[in-house]
Length: 334
Ligand code: CP
Image (cartoon, rainbow, N blue to C red; front, top):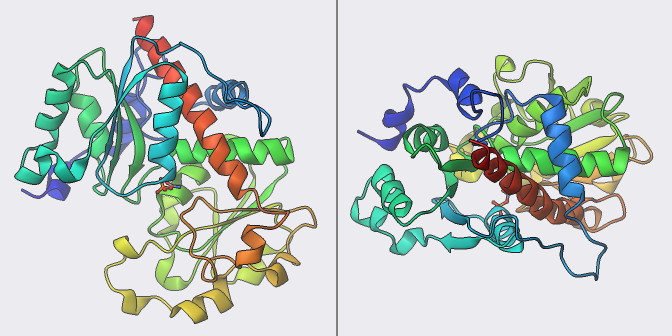
């Protein structure tokens, strides 16, 4: 049975419930679905306390002094993996980075046997990225009662810590969410970033959320209730306060013949200085990374004053510190 088949019977509605203890505290983070506005706000507020001015030493504590965090990235990552590692170390945790290329999964060991092996070595928190939908929830259903699971990117389904760091960045620049017009542009169909950002933004009260993509990269409308799906960038970007460009997820596209050539893509869906003239005058530009400069975003725009891309990366460490602290506190109270 393939890994995909293993998980296709899962009930996604349950994932949102699975992540809470019976008294409603966050134990695992699998998806932003099910998190209340106040829970997200508390995480953003806590993350703010882990930020220090540029050039000052990073904020540290010993909140995770007796905790072991295992990073299991079965898909490539720079930002998420490095920021989870730094977040855990800055909170005083032991950190294990499993090298998947030399791990026994390469010899056919099942994902659960890998988890049980590391659990036997007293890993308390598993940070998991995987190309197959359902893997983080599958692990969460099977770990010991005192172990926590954090989703670090799941197929095209969910990337909840990215969603939270995006919310933090928007709140820092815009103050609040209610009156914002947000445009997410690009390969929406294959994007876990778009899904988690949309879930977070709608929960925080954004009333005007636009998803703009070529027809071939559009999601099913029912996947994004509360958002408008558009195929014209000029229409979608007009008056936007926040413009988020997405990477084309080539690794998840079955046939590259179905998508426009890269020059055509940039001409129609690339975020450029020229296009940003249609957005609000103080609009910010976001990108989750890794970026394809000159395809999704004009290179000088990515490095310009309206870009918050570096701020997103900085916030990623703070959000992951807040989250690690929160789930460990939950388990200490059990
Ligand atoms: N944004 C994001 O998930 O980047 P990485 O793939 O580098 O972790």
